[in-house]
Length: 304
Length: 278
Image (tube, rainbow over all chains, first blue to last red; front, side, top):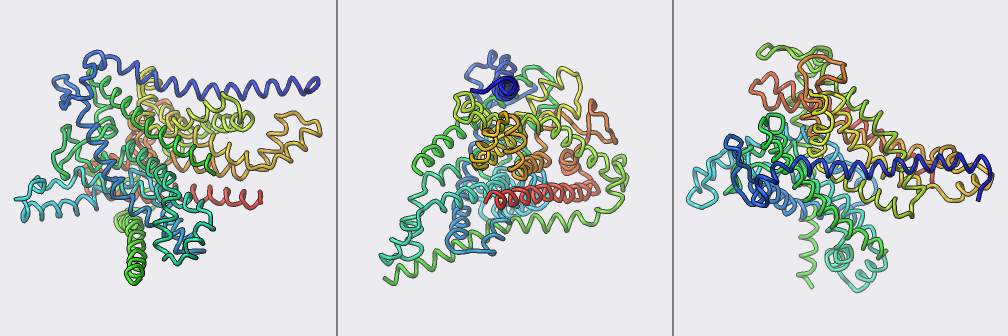
């Protein structure tokens, strides 16, 4: 209970604050409904077949999202698969093996990786990574083409290049979350392990990692969210081909990269609407991933 | 017994190797940036605009200026909204509504930047009938708002309740307590959060592709298409000209330096706060 003029000025204050809260709610609802409304022509034309159709042909006004859903999922999951052990190893090294200034320097360097803009990774990808991948593919093509999957022509650009670039870009996220949760392990647990004669690796693999397993999953989920939506670097090295890739070396496209490529050049309204529906799908996929991380993180903070 | 020791040593080696692999790309990226970009990074690069295709020389003055204008404009829009949203989350931290706002701000933060580009396109570019720097700035501000809101909330909650209670007990209204006591105490943390959001959007390209769009000429008109460093790097990287590739690398050096400088500054402020609160 307050009196007189303070009461009224605080009323205005809380009114203004509520306005900003409401603004954010309306903004997100607005974004979602704008995507849905603009996808409508495409939803009406293709219904659910949009998601399962493998053809994307603007010239014939035929649009199916399958190549891009596949491209997005395969690049992201492969990137997670490769980067997780590397990032986890780095987090363990920082947490358990190094201390003081040296540990600080290495974690700052890892953070530096996340500060580099994605267009710079793309530039590096085009002129440094892709030529290396191309000569690797050439080698496979010349010497090992009798093995299926190794017999695609050496483009350089394609799934593999995109996966490697994504790996570099998501490592810092997995490292930083894993490092933070590893700190949460109570030291008596650790000391109990050592007291029983366990080696360092046994303490890490049998005590620390099981203790923070869900936190590490949240870190992986965060990285997955990044990878799914990453646009520029992937667009620049994936080769931009609107078909389902058959091998690891084929050019492909992701949901984000096809939007980046075609949106400003699309002329037919169905084409634009289909691209926006791809955006809507991307929204939904990242939303589900983020929602799952949130549930995991909430469970951890309850445990604390 | 022995097998366990060997395994321990092997795993130590493997872990160090993995960390080395994680750091390797950083050095490779920085090395090639300097190797390919330094030679084109001279005064000309900063004061000249792009020359017609095929001619040598020219610079990125238009894009550097454009980056500052678009990011500056995004800050003017995004910072106040983000700050007030953060203050809302702090003042009503236990209310149902702030739970929803918190959830949705996470959704907004997790939204792929290209989707935000689509939204700014259909809300602003389509209505205005042409691309504009303003629409790009608004797209970037949508990305800044959730980052600033969450970081502001986090640092404001670090301020001890006793300070707030002392101020309220002296009869100061809630808004006075927030602005003169709590925000002031946590100011360096708030500034750190704001700077980190600026660093984050300064390197963005995807939301600008169909909003700011790019422009080969020097322009300060925010209602017209404008070139931005990231867009110009993207365009040049995909062009067939060697000369433009070199310029793209030089532009990338400038971009990385700007982003690193802002994030470094942000960390200085955040560190100052953690010393102050302790």
